[in-house]
Image (tube, rainbow, N blue to C red):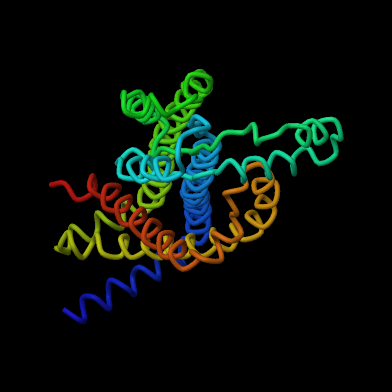
Length: 302
């Protein structure tokens, strides 16, 4: 068995070196396929960040009547936090709302003077609510319409934000579907291109394969060197494509971070480089193996 394995590896290396031009061409195509694979991973990172960014900008606020005790508001906060649809709830007291309002209008003397002339704080205490998902704001708004809560609530901003929430929900849904479709399309395209390239390389050795069959070599022995070649092509392409990825990410990261604050590709690469390399090697080697196995099948049929 060891002798057979060593011969398979030997013939595989000989095939790679003997067909230098084809080997370089095959590795080049696989590099492109793996760059597409890397692009899909990064595209999913960016799209996930974009969706999270959209969702983080949406919330609804519940304003309570001025005579409602703080304990009652905090009880409502705890009840909301117990809902599975709610991600988190922030309580803003009347004093905090006033301080924030003054800070935002610090340069407007008319507004500040008007506030000082008032005998009491005109702002209401509120709860800012973020849902786990955009589709769940309607459920939360329905919960707030319960009679026990309606009597202490002055206003809920869901009705005002509903049009925006519905539009953003549609955008997020379309974006998620688009990511899936694009991922499948590019993955299939990469596999087909690699398969056809390796098939051409094996086609150039069809006479040698026929001779090996005639002298009684087993199918596994004939197949072995080409599978080994596929693995070598895939692993080399994985490392080269990852090296290409580094400057591309360094270039693309700043503008993407400016557009989507939640996404920093440079940090992602730093924190996940080992995982990316392993993904590249597994995908590259797997692509080489599968393409080689299917490409050589026609020459092994009796």
